[in-house]
Length: 499
Ligand SMILES: NC(=O)c1ccc[n+]([C@@H]2O[C@H](COP(=O)([O-])OP(=O)(O)OC[C@H]3O[C@@H](n4cnc5c(N)ncnc54)[C@H](O)[C@@H]3O)[C@@H](O)[C@H]2O)c1
Image 1 (cartoon, helix red, strand yellow):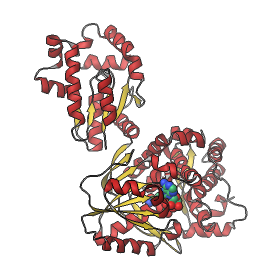
Image 2 (cartoon, rainbow, N blue to C red):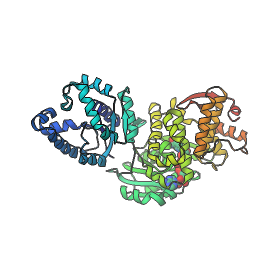
Image 3 (cartoon, helix red, strand yellow):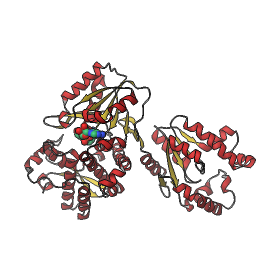
Image 4 (cartoon, rainbow, N blue to C red):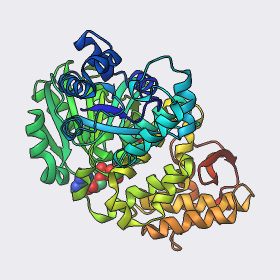
C-alpha cells in the first residue's frame, strides 16, 4: 500500500481535508510543515528569516525522505513542496498525489481567517496571492489527480479523494480496506492459501503465489461449479494444507471464486480470515465488496450463503488485461448500473463505448467500486437502500436462469435493466429520454437490451418468483427514475414488466 499526499496552494484545505481523510481511512495524518519545524526546532517563518527560503526547501526534502520511509499515512504537503523535481519524484514513487485546487476568492476567505503566518504571502494578501498562483499555475496543473474544493464540504472532498486515490476503509459488517492498484504483499499472513480457478491460474497464479509465498488450490472455472461439491473440496484442501483459525485464504478470481472462497472461509473452523483479489470487472465493481458469500443449488443461484466480509480487497485493473472481451463487456453492465444508481458522470463515461473504457479501466473501476461502497456503508444488511443494487437483477436473474446460463450475468443484467427502465417509463416513473439513454449506452458497449423473443415469458415470471426470497405476490423492484436516481417499487403484475 502507499501514502496519499495532499498538495495545492496555501488555504486549499490540505490539513483540514487531510485529517478527515486520514480518519476516514483509519490512517495516521502527517503535516510535512510540522515535521520540518520539529526537525529544525523553530518555526518555518523563523527559518525563512534566519536562512532564507532555500534552507526551508532543503529541510523539506529531508522531511519528505523521512516521511516516505515511515508507515503508510495521509500527508499534507507544503504549498511548494513539489517544485523541486527530486521531491516530486520521491513522493510520486511512494504514493499518490492529489491536488486541491481553489478559486482565488475561496483562498482569500480562508487565509484571511487563518492565524498561521505564511511567509510567502505576507503583506497585501490579494496581490501576493494572485502573483503566487500565477507563478505556480502550470506546476499545479501538471498533477493528474485534482479536486476543485470550492463550495464543497470537508466530507464531500474526503470522499472524492478516496475515489481518486482508489482507497476506502469500510465499516460495514466488519472493518476492512479496499484498495484499487497493483497487487502488493500483505505482511505477516499465517499459512496463506490462494483459491483460484483454472483460467485465472494460467495467467496470474504464479506471480501472486510468489508475492504472497502462498500455497494454492485450483478448482474448475464457471458458474456450474459454484456448488457444494466445490466448496467441500475447498474445506478439504484447507484441512490438508494445515490451515488453522489464524490462517488466511486468498480468493483470486471472479465472482464465482470470491463467493465460494468467502463462504468456505466463513464456515471453516467457524470462520477464518480471507482476502479478495478480484480478477473480473464484475467482481471488482460488485461481488468483491459487501460481504455476501455463497453458492448455488440446482433450484437457483446463491440460495446458500453467509454475510462474511473479507479482511482486505485489492482490485488491480491490470489483471483485467487477460479477461476475454465478452467477460469485460459483461462487467460493464454492472458499471452502467452503478452509474444509473448514483453517478451520472460514470454513466457518461460508459456512453463513450468500449474503446474508451479499455483505455481508462482504472478510472472506471475506481468510480464504480465507490458507488457500491457508498451504498453498502449506508445499508450493509439490505434493510433499505442496498436493494437499489438490485436494479436490473429481478428480470436479469430470471432471464439468466431461463437461458440456462447461455447469457453471461452482465448480459442478462443489461436486458433486465433495459426492461425495467421501459416499465418505469410506462408507469410514469422515468422519462422516455432516460430509457433511450440507458438502451443506447448498453448498445454502445455491445450488450443486449431485449429479452430473446423465443424465451417463454411465463418461465421468466416463474423464475422471478423463485429467485431468492421473492415468493410474495408483489415483488420489489429497483426502478430507474433518472440517471443517478432509483426508486424501490412493489409490483404485482409481473407480466406488465415484460411487455
Ligand atoms: N457476492 C456478491 O455480492 C456478488 C455480486 C455480484 C455477482 N456475484 C456472483 O459473481 C458471479 C459472477 O462473477 P464473474 O462474472 O466474475 O464470473 P466468473 O467468476 O465465472 O468469471 C468469469 C470467467 O472469467 C474467467 N476469468 C476470471 N478472471 C480472469 C482473468 N483475469 N483473465 C482471464 N480469465 C479470467 C473465469 O475463469 C471465468 O471463466 C456469479 O456467481 C454471481 O452470483 C456475487
